[in-house]
Structures are given as C-alpha cells and as structure tokens.
Image 1: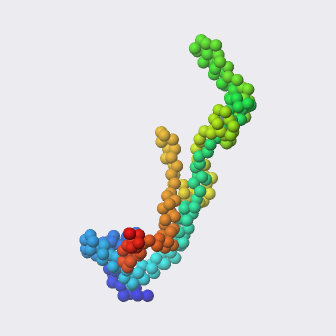
Image 2: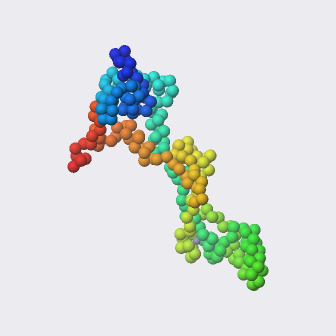
Image 3: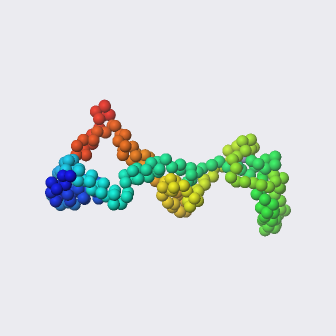
Length: 231
Ligand SMILES: [Zn+2]
C-alpha cells in the first residue's frame, strides 16, 4: 500500500472526497488554496493521482466492511425501484355505471336499504316543495358493485363506465413497491401519491454498470462526448 507516501493534505483530500464524492469541494475542505477553475482542475488532477486513488479505494473498502453497506446493496436498491410496478401502488380503472348490470339495464341499487332511503328522500323533497313525490323505481334490482368492469353493451355508458383511481393501503405494499413509494400529500384537490424517480434509478444502474458508451471518461474525471455524437 502506498498510503505512507501521501502527504497529510492529500490524505485529508481523500477523506473529504469520500464524504460527498465531490472533488472540488473536497479540495477546498482539505485546505488547499485556489479559486474557481484552478481548484476544479487541481482537484481532478489530484483525484486521478494513482496514490490518491489507491488511498480512496482502500478507505472505501474499509468503510464497506465497517458499515456492512456495500455498493452492491445500493445498486440492488436502485434496481428494485426501477423495476417496481406502480400499478401495485396506485391504478386507474374503468368501472361500471348504475345501468351496466341492472335488469334490462335499468338503474341498479346497491341494496334494498339504499333504495328505501332514496324513496324517503323523494317523499321528503316533494313535501318540502308541496309537490307530488316522484318515487324512484327498483326494476333494475339490487347488487350494484362499483368495482366491476363496465358492461360492453350498456346503453347508458356505451361500455365506457367511468374512471376510478384507487390507491392501495400502503401498509400492504411489497418491499419493492415500498421503496418506490415516497409518501402522500393531502390537499384540497385530493391526495397526491409520490413515487421515487424510476427513470433516474434505472439511469443510476446503467451508469454504475458503465453502459453509457456515448461518453468517454478521461483522466481527472473530465467527460467529453464522442465525435460522432456531435456531428
Ligand atoms: Zn354502463
């Protein structure tokens, strides 16, 4: 190990770099002088120094051992987020209307209880307005289930039903979907379910595996585009 050949300042740079992997910031925190571009250039030069690299990698391995948190674990977490199915958290569905499954497509009630309440309400309204009550009919029968798909030949909704958004009970999520779930915001407009960025997670995985061939990593962490991408 070449660690002993490093200066105290270089070591401090390595330690600081491990905090946030920001070479320029680490350069300044370590106590090096230099402003703006100079700091940036010197920092990337320092980072590409073989001895500094060796020191950083040794410290990184030691940290993995200490914390038992490995790069593989982080990678697996990103992969899980990228692959989680958002439908297991929230989904939009088309559901039947009141006429879809009523007898002869007449209005279908949930149960007798609901129908009786509607009749009472009609009588009450008529009495208030001193009019003859218009009593609703129950020829469509009972058993309305608002979760069923629309009837394709329904004359009232033409098989379209209506849209319904359902959010799952977040206590019941699978571990993968739980990672995708980033909380819920309740407002006047309703509830907003937040999710982690799946595209970003996939990008992180791809970058970690070195799949972006359109960029060339040069020494010192400077990145340039390949010539054919610029044409
Ligand atoms: Zn319908």
